[in-house]
Length: 400
Image (cartoon, rainbow, N blue to C red):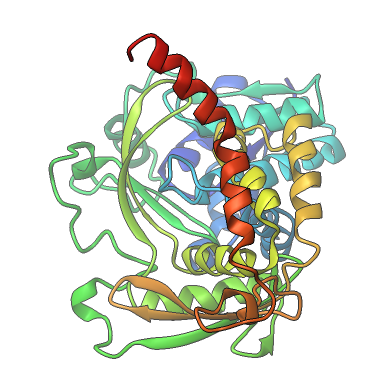
């Protein structure tokens, strides 16, 4: 291989990888750092990549594309893995890998490289995306072939080669931040009995520091897509930023879970997803008054499968795209406003309205009305009970 494009973040793993690749393959190394919401973490990343052996490093702002084409379509599906995880890391990987392949193609590089470990999910997500978009691409995955056994070895290697890092032996957390969330794994978190320290809190305030008064926030939707916050139209990325700030201030969106990785390992992680949590809750509330009952029930039955596809790296699979087409169709009337209350780590719905609402107060009322005939329920119940009554007679004959 003469040229390799590396998914570069400037963190411990990828900082070591650039140097290691240069020594191992003696080829040109090109870095690619995707700005998907890391903010201040990208300061000096281009110079750092070049100083450790890269010939150049692309640093690209993908925030709007990330929110518009990845986060929001996934939110329309109400995707949530194992009923807890809003897929913050998972959904960023196909975008990063997509751009990685595009840069490799434009640079004439034979291979791409990622810093995902051989135990995790990201190796699958990066590589499935790469092969789906360019089937003959070569993939270098250092964690599966190099001599280092763990992050402690990487820290020592970085010190030896004067590579600046922020990880230490005392706090070797693996952190991944983007516009949707931040994740913490490793270190003290590897013991699921130990409580996560307060320092593992970046996007959300600890509850002890949150305001003592609730805050109401209004989110507007257009065909299932968030379009405004408190009546102000914002771009997709700015909607995420605004809701992250509002919800994070109230400690909303922090979870501590043990999840099942695709490779079969259980892993404990602490995740913060403030804005995403608000959108998830508000979107479900918007659907509750605008979706037909059977459409909602059918769509809800897809949530575990769709979420597993995203988690396992099958964003560019035909089955995910097929499901997405049906989900997009279901959102034709999911337009309106939802008001939520943020307080001490909770996000609760306090109002919802839509010009396409299927909720009819004149029918739902407990007071007298002229639209619903209570007597109609008797025949409805008897028809639904018919098969149960026939079966009951058979049971009686058998003495059951």
